[in-house]
Length: 148
Image 1 (cartoon, rainbow, N blue to C red):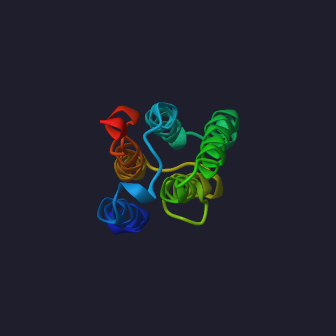
Image 2 (image 1 turned 180 degrees about the horizontal axis):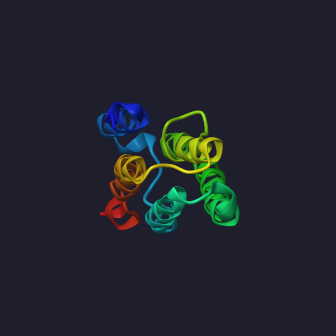
Image 3 (image 1 turned 90 degrees about the vertical axis):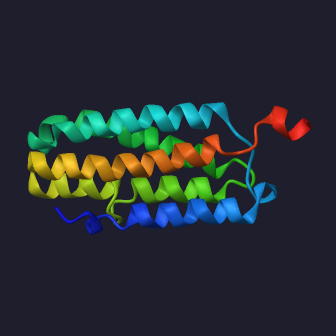
């Protein structure tokens, strides 16, 4: 599979780099809940993706559970001050018109099943995108650091 199929990972890397260059004053502080959720949702999403070699219709409940949790993260991130980049990263992951998690789910739904090779390659790329979300959060200033 051509890894360029998922350009969203590159966009997320660029966005994270911009934050580093822009400085910490323009981004929210570290949030343990957001970090924990990003790592947890990565595992949940990759586990659901493992099921894509089976019929989509048999796993709608599993997919809905992960999608709902991701939608909750978008809403959570949207309501944190100075947190636009994190919100955009979650929106990109979830967006069915992008080629990350949402696009993978859309393709699975449209095709019914996906090949194991496509699933594994997609998991690598989508896993990297989740890692970018987690790394952005873990790189934010912790409250203790801000007061020192």
